[in-house]
Image (cartoon, rainbow, N blue to C red):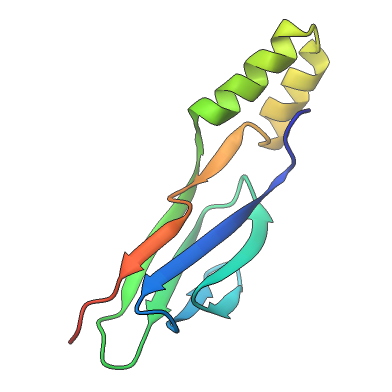
Length: 106
C-alpha cells in the first residue's frame, strides 16, 4: 500500500505542440501530463501538421521500482498491503512512460 492506483503519464514530442489523443479519451497538446490507472492499457495517437502520425501502445508492467515497493511491504510485515497492491495494480507502472517521440517530416 505504498503506491497509488494511478500514475502520471508524461508525453513529450520534438517539436512540441503535437496533438495527442488516447483510446482512453484523453486529449492534450505536447508537452502534456495526465493521470491514468496503473492497470490501463491504451493507444496514444500523436499528430502534427507536416509530420507523420505516430501511434504508441502503452501497457502496464511490473518494474523494479514497483518490485521494491512490494518487497518493502513484505519486509515490514504488511502482507495484507502487498496483497492489496498486487490485486489493485499498484505494483504496476505504465510503459513507456515518459513517452518521448521525435516527429518525422512527411
